[in-house]
Image 1 (cartoon, rainbow, N blue to C red):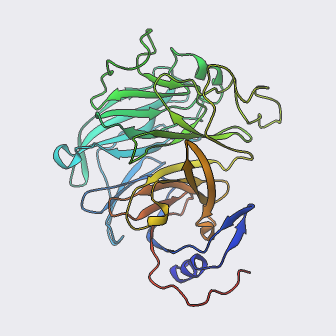
Image 2 (cartoon, rainbow, N blue to C red; image 1 turned 180 degrees about the vertical axis):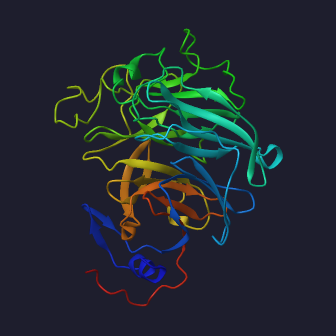
Length: 376
């Protein structure tokens, strides 16, 4: 779809998508880069240029206007199979001073693999002095459910989501397993002294009871940490994370197995934190951002969640600790959305998941027609 067609779709009148009311949006979509091979994550550098991971094990540096694209050298080798490959890329909070970059990826082989975090120093288009600072202790022989999202907290500690490995879901409830968890380390890989668990094997665990969490953000106003995760057949969740909490999987879930069989008869259980929001059927949530920019005032303080299956972004309004409203955006792309990020420039950046994927920038609409034709 070309830019003109995208803009026309963006200016459409109110219509319905999957039963959700979608208001005529005051935005336009522009393609920064195309021809990306299953891009997974995007991060913006201080000069406005962008880093994009491709799942196949490449890290690309793309100029802000998309006119230049170079591959970053010095990245680690990855286990590329199933859902494995490169995942999230984030900058150190003091990147302007130390140039440190963090990459989550699948490390290992068919018999023993797991999510790892690699840290290197970006100089030009090369990563120097790189090494792993974390490799999930519990290796698996599956190529699914890696998690792979990262988030820096204000104290420069780093959160990493890990999946349950698909065939090892019971380990999500085991506090001395690092599968199905959110882990917390310091920026050098050391273990924070105030992590909630101390039993050997649990020292890096921050929260437990997760299936395959791939969205992780902090609210700009309160610092609250929000996570979303894939359910099986139904049961995608948005959770408010707090250290030491158990989020239920697989003992409490709103989803069922792909065969239709029960995973558990319970949606909630004592001692386990219920989700803020659930999707049944699944939307397959992907990237997520807390919008705190100034380009879209109506979206300020809201969550934007990418949806792979529904091929759109969900805009979630939070009120009194609950999701009070949900709106579908960018459905006109008709593309699997893999990542959603707020740039330092206040624009929103999207990645579409395909062999010919794209990096898109969402900007305020420059032209608003006096009359909008009715939707088809």
